[in-house]
Length: 428
Image (cartoon, rainbow, N blue to C red; front, top):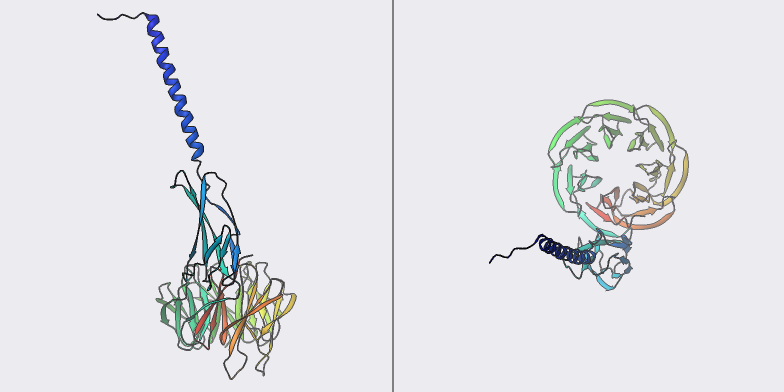
């Protein structure tokens, strides 16, 4: 017999069903909420301080780890990017540097959720050797002179003793050698990655692709020496045969030339587009506007060779050997953007190449100490105020200096046919 329910009974059944659904929904929401609280995503990056540290081989480095989340554990893994010198973890927050510190060593800190091992977050401490530590020496070719660093970190080095251009990887591996003209000296890398060199004994510039393919040869002056490239892509080339500064377009067209003192060597461009040229024989720094107009000549030590510009626009140039002698104290002159002398600072013997690192520290090559016998040189480090910090050994007859993307220094040792890689230390 079919059971007939009254309307009142039907409504009571519906109400009871709705109540059960409501209860189930509350329970689901409750448990999901608890789970959600337990599984709060870990932060994108674990906090580790400091981010970077310097250490001597075997030195213990302290650091702290802060993971703002519950239900996690953390692990440390030392990973050496270069020489598999991984060191050891001594304790929570203590790391022992390897006995031979590589170029860059990382201590990676990983946070792992206990309830869900798939949830992790990590950070790392970069461990670098102390500033001035030699990280390696690498063969380039006969009598390397200048270095330029490309956007990919590869190094391009002119070898005047064998008329070649060498390409080295950021780790110092020789990737290739490419023929040049006679006595290549200056080298610069443009924004496109193409490489320009100056052939000092052939009155020409050569343009190479990043693959080392010769793209173009351009006749310029008599003895082109150094090259700087401005923001528009034009080249500014010193010529120590004609005592001129040449302006050359990015396609190799000679646009103009300007009188540039006597025996011009180094050239650099500041953030305002002004061009600074070292007039070696007159012991001066010359300033040109971006248009090429001559602005002024300023005294700068004794027989300066190269020039560098710091973040504030100050000009730094080291002196070299006194004429007629084989050895002399190096004095680094610091000039303002207006050409005023801001200071003169001792920097070892016979100043040659100069670079300013990302932290504003000044590095000066102390080069050839005898006109007859080739000897080992050194590298002097100075504070942004010109205070002497230290001196570090280099190879035989060092000449030129460049800074790579990691902040390390590369020096050409012309008498040893190689380059030295030197730690720039930690960023300040």
